[in-house]
Length: 494
Image 1 (cartoon, one colour):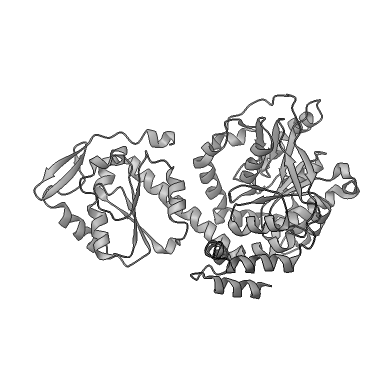
Image 2 (cartoon, rainbow, N blue to C red):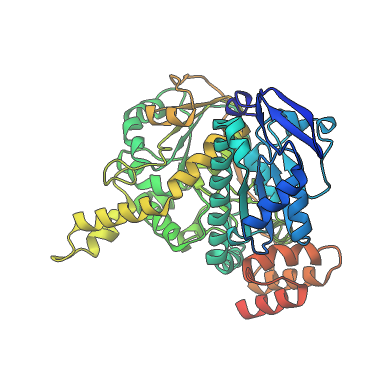
């Protein structure tokens, strides 16, 4: 439970008799009618002119009157109740509590964002209707408004994730088919040295000198770089130990291709080959076939099944939405030492979107002309990213989920203080380096083999339901998936 929630759960509630039923007082404010709270709730629901939808979310409705009225008029809809007071944690305090759905309160085991993410994972924002209750705003004030704001932000995050699935689902599956043909799948034995994560935000430039000095010391750290940060690091003579990539789209290919290009002839040497940590769904360039690849799985059955069938080792991490946060999962796995991060900005510096030189610079320069000069193209790109709202979504998620990561996380630059990451002077301590080894490739693993494994799994009663659901979200996001429909979609894909 966050400190924000702790400060907002202490209220003086008590249940008192109404003329027809019961009402709830928060301080001196009544949340329900002192005469007939049931009739009041029904009249309010009718006055909203609601249309049937998949899910109604009630923002602090007090006792269960509103939920009961909704269930009466929309019996097939899902009802989620969100409370801003710990009073509703005790079922004994709820004499008028109907079996109408699920609920959350500040003392629930999950934080609000995780609860909503789990409860709404299969629901589009267009099928969600938020209903607030004005007496609760009067009674709980900022606590109620904050609950609404967090709920709206969470729905925005879920919607963004579903849009990504719709846009990239088929591409992700195609990427997996190609990626399981890499000749050098790697596995890792964790170490204990400090780890530095280099994200690609502009503030990474502030840490170049500190990272250079530390890497050249007698006790260098292990360096993880997101693919979009690699050109800037190589320009400073800093070579990452791992390049991490999780994006399944075409921009990831541009970053990785440029990263491998800048390694140049030294890439031929075994000593200079970087290890590539990649989501099994990531878009990888042909150069990845020359490098050891440490695969990352999101734990879905279809990914695990394919990796096991191919005999590829992998690490299982949840989907994080942004590669910088996935890098944290990797860092805490491969070392028990402190983790330092730089460049995790979730913001721009004027027109600067990435640490320089950035891969897009060459792309933008190549497309510039007299009528569309380079400066204008930088401005347009910055404006597109700002309007998309993706940085705010990632930043909000990170702030509300910072407790998921161990306390040995520190910042190398001042920018990350706004995210709640404490700064700390790097400790030049000795420790064991993570050890990587290449796993032998299982013979016969190719695209036809991958197709056969998935089709067989869809016919297997043990896996068919779960895999149909997982692949259906990627291949048929607008339909209710079934094994036969998913099979046809897979065959069309190939």
